[in-house]
Image 1 (cartoon, one colour):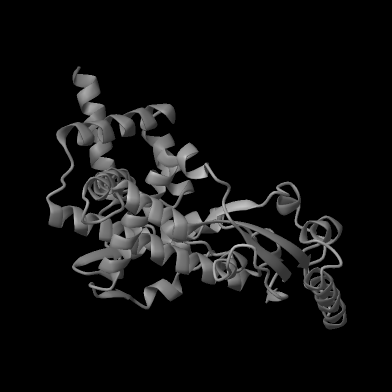
Image 2: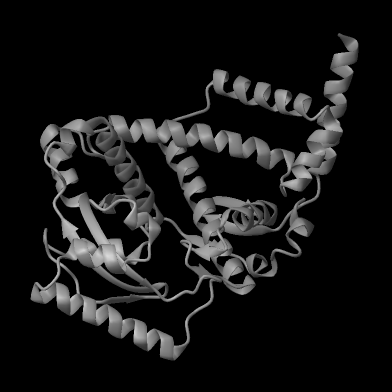
Length: 331
């Protein structure tokens, strides 16, 4: 027993020493301050998780990746701090059971790495500090508590059958699209001459659909170069309320059912998009999933509304941290 107690005390002492160095403030969200060490962690996390291609089409250079990673890091930090702020306002606190579970999970993690040295290697590899590891576990609990609160409060969300059906009617749609990719097999942009020829081809296809000489489905089968769309010829059921970054989905929701766009130009190529009605019975068959999405939508609305009510700022240190030096800021 004494040996275990001594090991625990040594672990705590070592982690205190590792966390003793001050880290400058990087982001302020209302009265909450987030240090540069935390920003560096998120930047590293997004460096590892952001795909080098823009939705599988456009290869990004190092500068573009860094810009996207910084923007994503700021978004994640702001959301996490707003969740903590709202939980504090609502009196949603970590329970004794939650705290115990966090402690036990950490102890298991330390054991899984063979002790303190392995755990510290894990922290270093992931640009983490011990205090941030604990904070991230707490954030998960706060997120769950706030989401459950929103889902149970009629003032925040979509709850009656009529409200849920209304949410479904404006947020769900079925779309088909024909893509003419402006990116070659190596991920490079086509030349200007190639793009001009490709756009003309897309215009010709659109005119043939509009004139009725070919159906949309036939044109899709003959011209589409997107494997995902080709694998789902009946169309994709999408939810605009989830917050999509795909511009063609957003544009599709400006259409009436059955309507077809002209040729749309995006960085990854040219699109012809058709919006269709969602098949009858989809709502009843997927009601539980739709209700969960509605709760997510209400939760996200609360976060966005709160953003507009808080002072949010970032310091110059955020622009100093990059992929090469980020571990220098992990203190």
